[in-house]
Length: 246
Image (tube, rainbow, N blue to C red; front, side):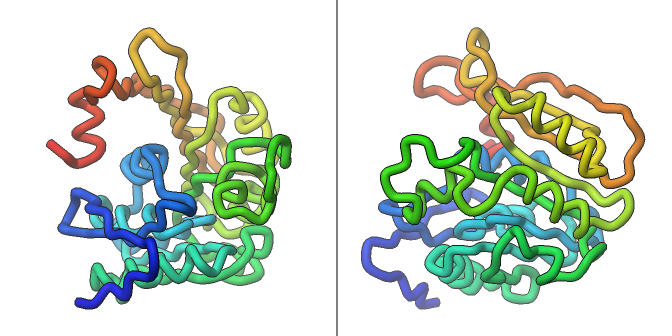
């Protein structure tokens, strides 16, 4: 079908189910963190999932291929990204499973109503505040820095949106881990599962995958670390499986 690509946009192969995604290389393109989060998240049969700050819709699209969830919604504040996401959904014939909504994470519970999702996923801005940002309205700055929403906003709205014992999945940076776990507990989302991601086996982790449960008991499983590269430019076999390339 006609993908209606706009100037400078491209179609990227997602390596699963023949799916492709529309991206603009001058804006913010998805990275490995989004792919790993989609593999880490668990959406069961008949469950509804919300991806907050969905960007170009990468996580909902991947989750349709990797889980048995019934429906997936992507919430995105930047209309240009939301438009690309909608066109990617149409390109992959996923209109009956995936919906893209333009809106603000800070108003998510008002938009969708409380206790309306079984699962919430989020690949949030990692950096605090606007330090070092030349243009706070730039798409890349919004994706990487807490310009339009904070960790507190994400956890507050997620706690409202999730059903009792609903699950929360997030990828973030380990340097904020103490703050993340503390604030999750305060919000009523109990940390249940965690996995560190290391670039090389002898390097410290640069990503952390976290699962929480609204109203869950206090007990967390720490999974074996995931190492991305065997050597420079060569992915580990386990990572290739995570990407669906093996």
